[in-house]
Image 1 (cartoon, rainbow, N blue to C red):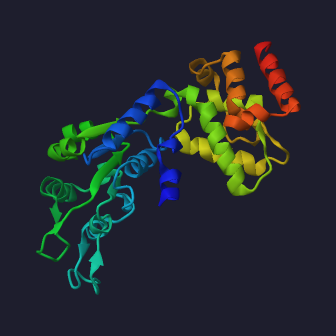
Image 2: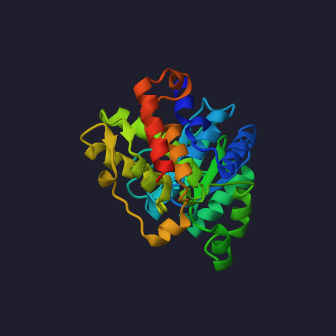
Length: 311
């Protein structure tokens, strides 16, 4: 369990921008309570990562973290998946089934894409949150809800409330604490740190001997608008690592390109790229190991800084 806490803790949320520091603060605040949390943000921004960080940072982190994607099950199966059912409750229910509410025990139930929840199930979920009890499908005996609830969505629930497709009372019940994850294009200063973190993990998992990201590739990664956010960045780096034959990941291995509009919106400072390179874009050691870099590596980093500075 200690390893699981380390794998999914707040340390896996990478960034030092002001907006990400605000996310760190909210995670720390809600981890000390059992309040319901709503995580919002575009697809690929890492909403489940934040939910896991909240769970594993809390005192009940030793209990299960149970995730349910509300789009993963047909409507007629989602209720049974959440609440469970008893044998004979419907055609095909040949044995009793324990639902996700019960499986989460005293841990966390994470409902991803809560905006896709059918309106009739929204009413049942509201009752669960209000009364802290639920009933399995086909059963009349109430079961106490012990788990904490965290929900996430990429949809604008406020607008859905106005349109009548999401219950207003459920919206406010879920939004006791809201954690908003900004898109990657709004925190470009975090991209070099994310590249370094993902690059190390990808090369380890794919057993590739790629050691560096070229300065040109880093500049492209920093300037690209990333409509798919961190998930798209991870996929692009994975492709780059797999296709790289030598030690240096180059632009031609990346499945992205930018046009003039993207360049105008992106930071173009050579110093920014040089700084990003120095902070690990070339997959150089971090922490104490950085003090033991070889003379050849120090010289290489210095040359890249000078080349970027002089264009």
